[in-house]
Image: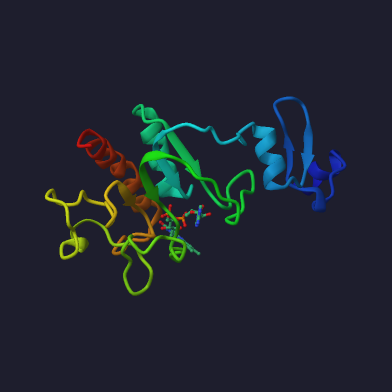
Length: 184
Ligand SMILES: Cc1cc2nc3c(=O)[nH]c(=O)nc-3n(C[C@H](O)[C@H](O)[C@H](O)COP(=O)(O)OP(=O)(O)OC[C@H]3O[C@@H](n4cnc5c(N)ncnc54)[C@H](O)[C@@H]3O)c2cc1C
C-alpha cells in the first residue's frame, strides 16, 4: 500500500483518495464533497412521500431498498450520512408513513411524547403497546404508539441489536407499511 501511495505521490494525510465519475480527484474528502462526487446529495422535494425512513443504518437502508423496489415513494434522512446533514438542520416533510431507525444508543429525545419509549429510551412497538393502544385493530408488528410510525433495528425495545436482525426488521417493516397504507 505504501508503495502504491508513493507511486502516485499521495501522502497518508491525503487519504482516502476518490476518483469521481467526472474525473475529479478528491483527497481526504469531507462527507459533503463525497456526496457531491457520487451525485447523491439532492435537494428535498416538496412532495408527499409514501415512506420516510429516518436513519440510514442497516435497518433504515434495508427498509428504503425494499420500499423503493416495491413502488413506495421513499425518502431517507440520516444526520451523519453522505452529505453531512446535521441533526440541527430540519425540514418538514409530508408523508403517509414513517420509520425510525436510530441506533443502539437510542437517540430518541427528539421524538414527540406520543411515541412511547421504555425506561431506557427504546421505542415500544407491537404487542408491547397492548395496554395503551386505542385503535380497534391491533398494532402491526413494529408499529409504535403512533399509528403509521414504525421502529426497527437497535432503536426498538427488545430488538436483538445485531446487523442481520436490524436489516431483517427493516425489510419486514415494509410489509407492514403496505398493510397500513392499504387500511387507510
Ligand atoms: C462497537 C460495535 C460493534 C458491533 N459489532 C457487531 C457485530 O460484530 N455484528 C453484529 O451483527 N452487530 C454488531 N454491532 C451492532 C450493530 O452495529 C447494530 O445492531 C446495527 O448497526 C443496528 O442497525 P440500525 O440500523 O438499527 O442502527 P444504526 O446502525 O445505529 O444506524 C442508525 C442510523 O441513524 C442515524 N441517526 C441517529 N439519530 C438520527 C436522527 N435524529 N436523525 C437522522 N438520523 C439519525 C445514525 O446516523 C445512523 O446512521 C456492533 C455495534 C457496535 C456499537
